[in-house]
Image (cartoon, rainbow, N blue to C red; front, side, top):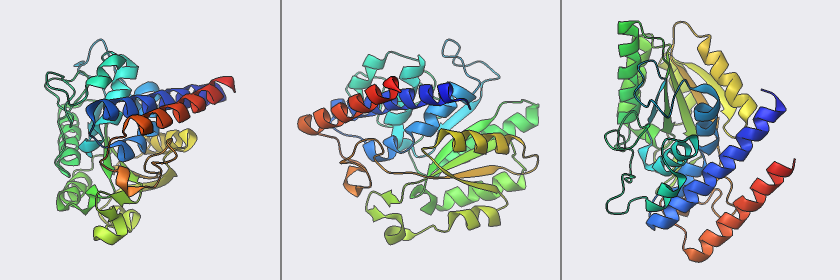
Length: 281
């Protein structure tokens, strides 16, 4: 990845983070922490890697994406809006009566959403089904999903992991967002699924560990996953919950809380300054 592309991706990810804050503030509810932690990987997928077309949201050969940690919908919505699936202004209407932007992804009403999700564990299972279907019909598209580290406490995640390995779904790439926090505290305190690398390896997956905020590492991991011929790939991303907003970073209280007006102004000012710095580089 050249420096220009890296710069463009960092700028876009900053705009995505602005959209996340705009959305949860407008809704006065939502999940900013785990949305901010996946802004970078979503930016890479939707702006650099995936075969998609905002003007043809149902094209048959498009790559599929499933947000298994569906409560992080503000991140997906912000990426879709910035990519041109719908107007960025719509983000302010998150969770409002009459808005198509619900609290969790809805494939029936939101352009660009491939799978409704929210009940933890079901998203990766649906992604397995998509990948198996592609194998069955000889389709070449890839299937991506993002799973939370807290979500990995769900038994259904491991049923899906077992299934994906048994069916040799090498067209499936799962990003595991390891930010260390979930709604009730740290992942280790609540019900630790760690070590996730050893578990996915034991379930027959190829495992790659990266910094989830480093675009070079994200790209390298995806390229490596494309070379896999027999196994699904789990890309374990070490991330910071609330990344990009200083007072939200690594704070469990921002898992499911929206900023008030004063906090909104502080967060948006930080992101505005970060964007200006990136654009000046």
